Length: 478
Ligand code: TRP
Ligand code: ZN
Image 1: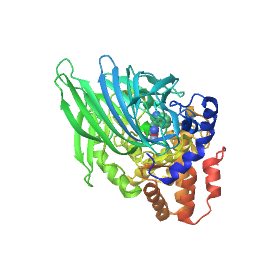
Image 2 (image 1 turned 90 degrees about the vertical axis):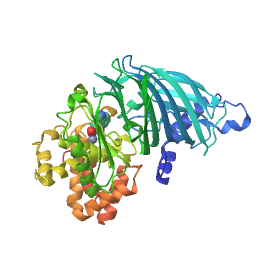
Image 3 (image 1 turned 180 degrees about the vertical axis):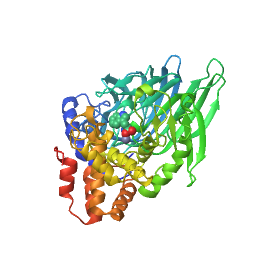
């Protein structure tokens, strides 16, 4: 999905180099139809050109919608899926790639006609029977099955499809969503989703629960199985897609703004997570007052019981927790709904815009709840007195040196320090105006570091070059 003109300008800026290279090596085989006109049709690039994740995402098209119909059996950890991907071609396409890791593809069609496909590493390459013209909206259907993979990232953390003691969870940051559905899995291509999942009833006849992003639209009892349909109406980056299968206690409510709240809690965590159902609406209300209107049509949380996972994720509308979260972590993941989920980093190197802001939200919450003042937290980070400040000087926040380090402390702690420095420089009135303008201008889109700097300078009328050079870009500790 590409709601803002700026996004397509950006794509045409970084796709060509890779696309050209591919076209040169494949032009003689690129045409499936064999007619003369197809000579101008070229393969879509195998990546969008992300500096840290070169193979992530794909060029030549822009996905508008994913319709995923899945069948999952927890006992065997087998998944069967059909992905219906509706996309618009951004070039004349002889063929295109989807990101997919593991699983077996049984069939692919484009516009209803059987398509040829090949697989290499995490790329599924699809050659439609008839090339797709630039500007056309086309529908690709991929049927697949298998045991979905768990990915171990360079930093040792697990993502992708993860089995739990009572089911499974799917987590996609930065690349894990390709383990359970094919797609354009770079954050720059956001889309809406319908996720429909059928799971069996267990030996006692109790159905497994299925929790995903957005709103539950239908629930069906098929006798031996149940089917749940979740809909995400607002654009979502692939890394924020979530699916949790297991047993959950569900708490439904409403925020003061009448937003539906859906909190799913693993029974093993129900005691420790007792306050989550009240805290979610409270924090969402608090954050809306500071960051602008809540961007999605529902909110909530999934509190699972997978303590060995060791992290939480800001999955869209319902952040996912591997165990009962404390208040600070809830604030962090809910703040991501504005910073990261609605306004999504354009490339992975821009992730400080997401993590720095979510961390700064923690500071604001602490200050307003009678804890340390944000100035003091800043000093504690600078002096190394805050436990979260460990490792924050390893690299400048806007420039993670490798994919393995996109979730390292500088992006969080020093990122929040940059935000605090901006607040100091422009004053509270302008600072909160900047945050609200940011979430309004880039709502449901992508944004980058240059745009943030330009907004800060535009709103304050100040030249902030030195501030950003020193705090955001310089390798040294300021
Ligand atoms: N984004 C998560 C958070 O801040 C943390 C996280 C989990 C993460 N997995 C990641 C960050 C992979 C970057 C990459 O709560
Ligand atoms: Zn975060």
